[in-house]
Length: 332
Image (tube, rainbow, N blue to C red):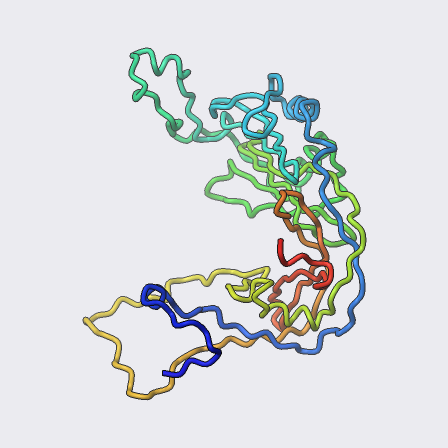
C-alpha cells in the first residue's frame, strides 16, 4: 500500500504499539486583533528570601517552636513526623512555604513517640501513619469575609502586602462548619500571575498555609505575537496542540452519562467502505486578553511571562504563551 512522504517502513513492534491521537479541536479566529507588540515580564527571586533567618522569622510569626535545620533541600522548623506544627521554606524557584498544624484538625489523633513504638524491639511495630480518631468539635471555622480578613492578617505576618492579592473564600460546608478555605491570588498590573497562597482553617485555628514567598523582579520586555497568531498557537504542537488543550475554566461534566444496559448487546459491524467517524470540535475565539502566567524553566527558575487568555462567545477561555518565536529557545 502507498504511504507517501518516503518515510521508513514501520517495524512490526511499532505497528503493534501505535495508536491514533484523540485530541481533535480546531481553533478559529473570530476577529481578534492582529496587532503584535512588546510586553513586560517578571521573574521570581528566591535568593532574596531563602535562608535560615527567613525560616526562623516565618516560624515565629506562625507560632512554630524550634531552630531551623536543613532537610531535603529546605529549611524546616518544628515537627518532622506529623505530630506537631511545622514550617518549611523550600529552596525552589518560588521559595515555596508550607505551614501545617495537624493537632488542630477535627480528626487528629496523638501518636506515641517512635521510641515508645519500638520498645518491643520490633521495627515492624511502628505505625507509619497517624491513626484517625473520632471527630472532635473544634468549633466553626472563619468563612467568607471573616476568613479573608484572617488571611490578610496572616500575609502581613509573613511580610507580604495583602493589597497585592485577590481573594476567594471557599464555599462554606454546612455539614462540616469546622473547615474553612481561602485562596489569595497575586495580582500584577491588574492581572493574576498564577502565584497564590492557599490557607485552611480548622475551627478558629490556622490549619495550613501554602504559597510562594519569592519577590517579583523585572525580567525585561519581550516581543509578543498578536492575538490572531495566538489562536493559531492553540493548534501548534510546540505549544501543546498535540495534546489536549483544556480551557482555563474547564469544568468536568456532572452526572453519569453511562446507562446500564438491560440486555447483552454488541456494537454493530461497520459497513464495508463506510466513512470513518472522526468528530472534530471547532472553537471560534472571539476575544483575547493579555496577561501573565507562571512558567518554570528547566533549571527551576520561575518566570511570569506574557500570555493570552483566548475566549469563545460563551466565555470559555484557553491560555497560550504570548512571547514571539524569536525570543524562545525551542532546543531547551
